Image 1 (tube, helix red, strand yellow):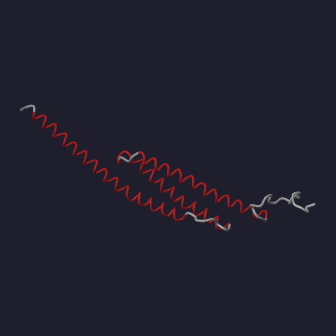
Image 2 (tube, one colour):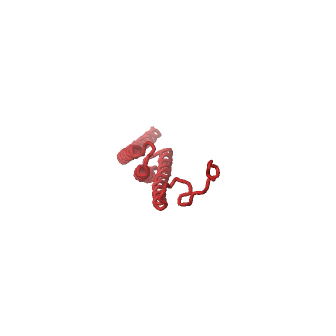
Length: 161
């Protein structure tokens, strides 16, 4: 009989400890969900706004092209900030909340893609501004060959001589 009592006590201790750890894990899960749910909903809303702000179709004027590029640059800036906020929270709480590595990798990949696309859009705005200044300085079409140079004689044109 003596042997069974310590065995029962050790089983009781293991059961109580397991219950405490399980309740701690449940509590941690509740804390993580309470913080993560509003953040992910906010992120999804920002991404929907970003999708809606992306230009559709080909612009027909310089002003439309610049406005589209500027709108894309601003929208992708908001998306980039949202990804950075999400990445920071995941980095801080990954172990405590038991967040899978795949989710962290997905956020890092999304941040890299949004950053690249934002850079392209913002560079497009700068390029359009540069082309506009060239057109104003040259007084012509920035896409025309040899802007600002004297026209050359084209010998392939019949009757050019």
